[in-house]
Structures are given as structure tokens and as C-alpha cells.
Length: 65
Image 1: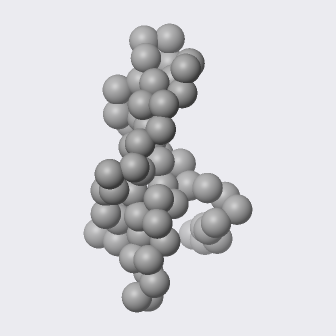
Image 2 (image 1 turned 45 degrees about the horizontal axis):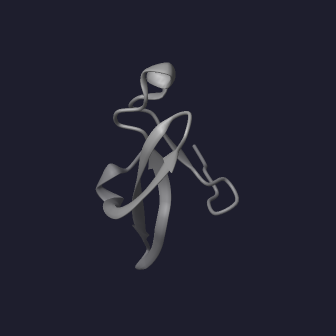
């Protein structure tokens, strides 16, 4: 993944079961895709196994290898 294309945003959401998620935007080819990537840096203890990995909204991106 090209992390140099990502910019952290101020957007956050709260899940009752997982905790606070933070978001990143991607600037690809001069087009900004706002809040397209999200993840949990410090999830609640019950969801500790999701700390670190990030996810894309699949309906907003095409991921190719």
C-alpha cells in the first residue's frame, strides 16, 4: 500500500463495541478521496485484536495488486 498517498483527517467515529476509529483521506491522481480509509489504533479491550489494521470502504475504491 502507498501510505505516502494518505493523509490523516480529523474525522472520528465511535462504536459501542470497538471504540474510536480514525480516518485517512487519499490523494490519487490529483483527486482527493475523503475519509476513505479507517482503523482503530486503540480499540476497547474486547476488540483488541483489531488494533492496527486498516480498512477501505469497498464501495468507494477499486483495489488492485
